Amino acid sequence: MYTISSPLYIFKNKRLDKWYIHLNNALSLQGRVYNTYKVRYSDQMSDTVSELPVFDKVRLIFTFYPGTKRRCDLSNMCSIIDKFICDVLVRSGKIPDDDYHHIPSIHYEFGSLDRENPRVDIQIIPIKEEEC
Image (cartoon, rainbow, N blue to C red):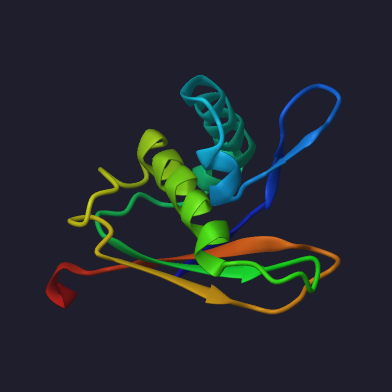
């Protein structure tokens, strides 16, 4: 099993304005702006992902650690990070594709409040062929 951490935001410009990675925010973006943010996320995560081995099939577990007690919908936080990180894994050659043949199981869960390091931890669990 491998664990990487994803930030809850990316910097959207040189003034270091933050764009929070949240499904509701993503749905309000035009396609070009959405793609720009996805590329910035990819750039931000590329060093972390480059240290991973190559996989054929994996299970993914996303654990959300918010920085505040403010309530939110778990899938709104994790689903867009799920989409972004799966694209990074494919683009970097770590998995052949992000379809259900290569990622048959995805799970979202709440971790705990972490004011010092809010994030989403992503567990990547390799699946052996005999487990399928």
